[in-house]
Length: 613
Image (cartoon, rainbow, N blue to C red; front, side, top):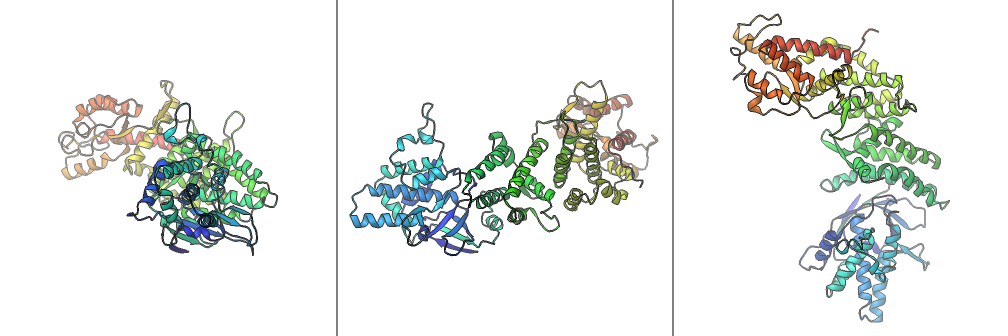
């Protein structure tokens, strides 16, 4: 890697700068253009405009040097359009023939390249993505300067004259207007852009074998991140372009892109929003598209969780793609699209989503998400594609059984605080079918057996797990009991400790006597306090309400607490607690332990494991 301050004059070198064919389109708008314009005409300002990253593309001997624009396409595109607009403005001024020829030569050196030294034909030097290619070439070739009335800026738009869709065309018109309105601005900006002394950029040059993802992340940690998904998409379709180059059939590439990538990931606003939505993975965030591509890499087996991390995702894709022929690449793109359709249907991140117990797929998906075990999503995706539903949408029994096994494993591991650090490795083994979920549970049976579950429920690990467990027990009961008309619920409930965590003031051992499992009062003060502190964190002392009680009400004595809970107790798991308190006129350790036992029995019924071999 080489990084150095550079004038825009580096473009004078005979080369091609290729914006990856399927990279995102040009998105700068009037506020960006205005800021750039004002900076360049202000002689008292520093004109440093940021960095660009160029990666060398291997070429044959005698071929024009090629570089891929990894970062900085917005900046580079804008500066080249401004250079063209400045030239067009100057060309109309009264220049002598020699100066006019020199100016034209500089423009052509910076914006065009020759295939060979003796060739008279010139081509646009910056080769844009397919989304902007035609409009950009028209601007740089000077073909739009006489048709500006047909271009409508956002600031000029109205109902009768909507804004022009192409940002490239609007950029040229904006600069044309500003240069025309501002005296001497064209000459000033031209001189800045062609000067070798004006170090406008930091240019970072990468060799063909360097990992641009790692470089980009390190130099743009505070900016808009180039995602692994961007790099992978560009790699896929750039490779396809190379494979059809001899056939001169770019239409085949565009069709593959349109029919599979564009329709899958950019069909409409909601679709684009879903795939760009970010999910937190520990201390980092990744968007849904990256997470999908990670799943696909695990399923296909070219991502090794023991060797690779998410930072390596783009690099492992490149190594996998480079060996493909055209037919293999087409099949792979279609396979990604197939997995994407399943992924979007299953991995929903909508806080307004309702859940029903009998929806096996969404139940598992939700439990994985709340337990923060997204590393197993790849296995879920693999199963759903392998054992697809029948024509009526019914899941195969083998799929239902395996999803339930996975759900049981995750619930038991999380409740019993068994480390999930090896889940990435385990997921890969599941996909390869060299290990089953049952094998995994058997290997850890002493940590996750029924006795371990009972102990875990007597000291529930955190509020999140208690809420999740009570929510799904509530849905299970609703699925079985005809008295419930509503079978589906949104996951919008708040956990409440019935006997409050701050119990000393209104729930002290004198106000609410501590009792043993058999109902006998404990008179030893230290022993009583120890039992009470432990009872607070049993699942039997917890319920979920449709609204969180404020701290003052939550800590009230029994009658006031129950009155407050009644307002928000829509669920059976809350009403049963209120009923017990009203019938017993108290809430103590025995009530808590009895309810813990009841909930434990339901857990074992719902998520059983036969550990006999």
